[in-house]
Image (cartoon, rainbow, N blue to C red; front, side):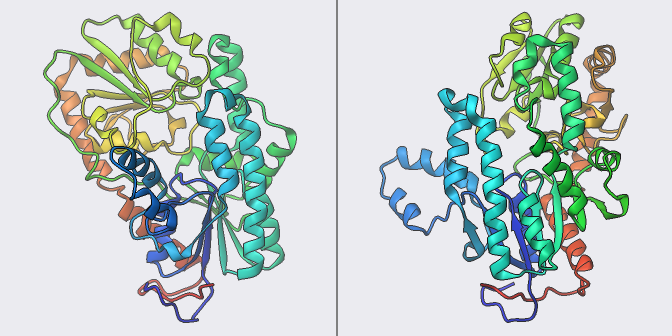
Length: 430
């Protein structure tokens, strides 16, 4: 789709407050000839006054700032179609990163989401798109406005239903109080739960990335005929297999927020009980909460604090097995990255992955230390099986590239809007 659009049809507005996987969603809509507007909290435009000013700074200050800002930028996405509401997003980013403000992060994200939904509703009223894609947690106000105008509402449900998650996390706090402060959103006001629940009921279509999310939505009243499962993707050029280090260590890799939502205690307990020579759990990511629950396992793992995404592939290349025993996800992107890196994966059905049990790794029940031990030991003792599953993992990842995701989503949107799929159309802009 070129930058100058003729007035053939109204298009699609994509509206996430933060990036998540939404850059790929917006690019998919653009490649399908349908992107009317991409609305978000903060987006970096290199040719803006901010970008030009940063280029005047001396290195390495400039490089460090640009590296962070480019996390909020997407190659090939038409910047002219990007509209931002940065104030609330920047406040949330500060609250989530600055230690003195972290206690307020949940309150800030609720306020951000509520405010963002209202701002999107205002743009929708002005621009009258054919469809609005909005994201769980911030869609309620925007969908109310869009529905009143007869605009198609599509919810991108990025995680399992909020009631499913709250139930699991409340149970975890009772089972393992030493890890309770790592469950950062265990308490949500009733109005937040009600609005999040209503979003899926209001939507004409709900996009989910996994069967786990689909089942959670159906359990809480969403019509199955309106749910579409569309797995995410991975950059198979950045994440790729390389020869493993020959240092005699067997690295069980975990990448993500180190919290009990991810089942970290169950992984560490399995490794502790196995007590195998040469085994090294490598946890890569920021610790949620005080980390006091980790104290009992401090001799059983190596921790690497948060790593920039353009560098994280190097840690996947050090692993022998990727373990991700999560309790509550949508479809964990780290697992796609592990597959692309040629790692066998041990995970749970709740991670929402595309891993097939016994092919690219193993699916184990949540909270099942014994089965985790069994599968880790099996891969520890059987190099041939690790290598076979690693090859299968890479092949599986090649089916789920971001290019494939964009093509599937573009085709789906044109079908939903009753448009021909053979060629991209043009949309009204502005």
